[in-house]
Length: 347
Ligand SMILES: [Zn+2]
Image (cartoon, rainbow, N blue to C red; front, side, top):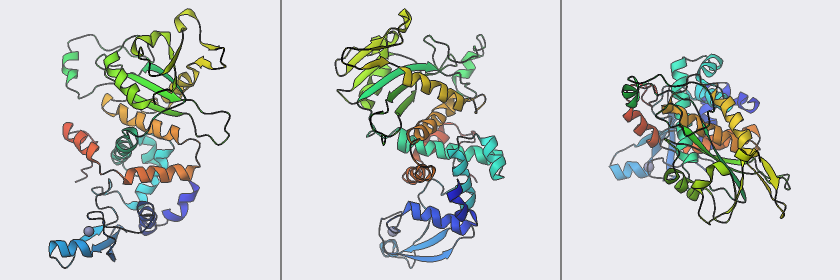
């Protein structure tokens, strides 16, 4: 986080840094895209105001004002630019809301909202990005994550039944409704022959249940045709199509890894290792709710896939991602769960 220090002196410096990352090639109007913008006086929180001449003409007004954060995910927040910068640095360290609140000296509730905004922005722009596909050697596996369902509709139905079983990683066909949503993991192995190769690229999907009809379209969307595809025998029923060079190990028969005659290592060890790393991360969010599980998982996915980069490069990649979303996904989510501290509405 050291590189942030010069920008953490005051809100103006923080706002200037954020603006430079939002518009590396010069400021354009967030509403119409015109570069005919003139700077005006700053807001009280250090944000720069702009007058867009094109919008003013279009609207028949003398001025058409916008700020550094117009149409950005931060627009409705009362958190200052300096605080946002600090929170984003701490977010990248994989901290939970309690730790971020303590380190940034803000209210825990505010920290909670901030991480939901950041995780949600990453979910919308990075996780849902259809152009991000895995290739070459791809392993897949499933695991189950205990997650509560406080406030969800099905909670009412569950009250009539046995309390859900707690405990981690129980194999078997658990479902979200049972309090253990399955996760589908796909990972493209890191190319060990190339020292500059990026980290193993992972794609993680939180599911309602494990059914072939649910899983097949995800794999088809995420894994390029022709890739080598490694699974456990246990999962074989999902992958009967001939789109991949599909090879299995049979965990049930005690086979965990083997080398095929063509030299290919057949195993799912990369994905197995990722599960324990993911679990270690999710354990920081004690009593994680199903409502937020996919957001936390998206943060893990993003940070893991940028793990080969310098801290600063990852920070700037995060911001580019965050600035490319309008927060529509979060607004929809907030609309569904009106009372949750998820919303962008700080008023
Ligand atoms: Zn404009």
